[in-house]
Image 1 (tube, rainbow, N blue to C red):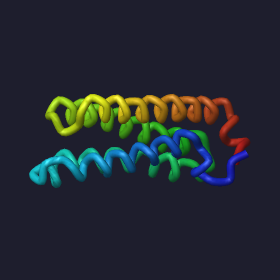
Image 2 (image 1 turned 90 degrees about the horizontal axis):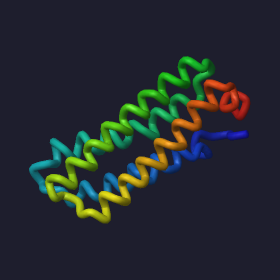
Image 3 (image 1 turned 90 degrees about the vertical axis):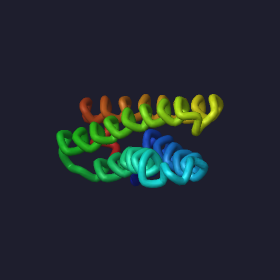
Length: 125
């Protein structure tokens, strides 16, 4: 039984991902401050924020809608990881680290969604 969105593994990995995104985007060129940095940060923050918001929704449909928004933001972030590497803003090791966090978040988020569909997640609240 969970008592807080902070206990959801998908949220934990997503939060770690956000911290990494803020860490790396500090080192991006200044001219990207209102471009890629802003877009990347907003997409990354949207993942755990939507998991948190959806956690307290009462209906399956509402929960799944927020989790789906989180999934969309996760895929958007996945693109920004690729773009950041291709532009030379991150090296290969950071690319691998960020991609790994996205994969783990995605896996746990998909599992959480399956739990919602099967009523397991609703019974845990």
